[in-house]
Image 1 (cartoon, helix red, strand yellow):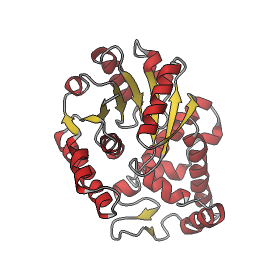
Image 2 (cartoon, one colour; image 1 turned 120 degrees about the vertical axis):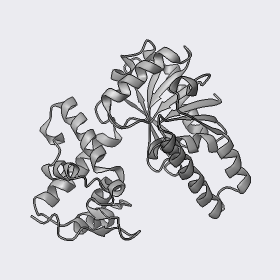
Image 3 (cartoon, one colour; image 1 turned 180 degrees about the vertical axis):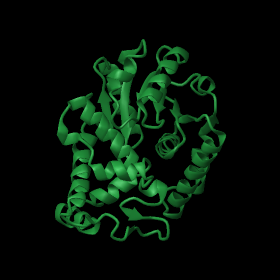
Length: 296
């Protein structure tokens, strides 16, 4: 496998494109908006510059990586001749279903279709195609160039050959692939999101404040980041979306999103991406707890 298309030039998409390109793949980065593609490429160049500054790569490797990426605003042109497509569009079920339906019609018959979804069932995405055996999940972690895990999700009809191929590709990226089956939340978010939701419930119920909750989990459980800060980093809207998928999939009240999370998303407090969530990111590179806003 030499040629890969990545759909979506946002945070996850440009990180995935960067990782493939740095490891010698020819990458077609696709987004409908030229300005989003430009921002994505700027981010990749900036991140490569940081790797150069740290001595992880040299200037020649940076140039080679950038040369391995071509950008497209046309889905049909972007997927032409690729052996793998990794969809990294917004975590929206109807959007992803439409993308997979279109990909099935315009991609070569042997092209593998992967999704970076963190919660939407792979089997459901596969059902709108005529190649269910070639549809699989590749759930990268953010930031993609740094995090070594790839959660590989087998749909109900994903073939052994495709699963093995994606496992091998992940290893070529320097990642550690772990294969799981297709149930709501998979493994990463099935365990992570209830923890984040419970941390928000604890805040909502006045058990402890933001800093106390995060400090306890960092110092007591050896987590590198507390659950509330991690929620900010993921995006509170994304957390809400994943919890809704799990609540709908399992019909279990333990996955019901906390009312505080729902209100924060409605208010546009989405975390790092909006400049404010459980912490304030607008005035300092070091996050500060939003002053007394969430005391009950």
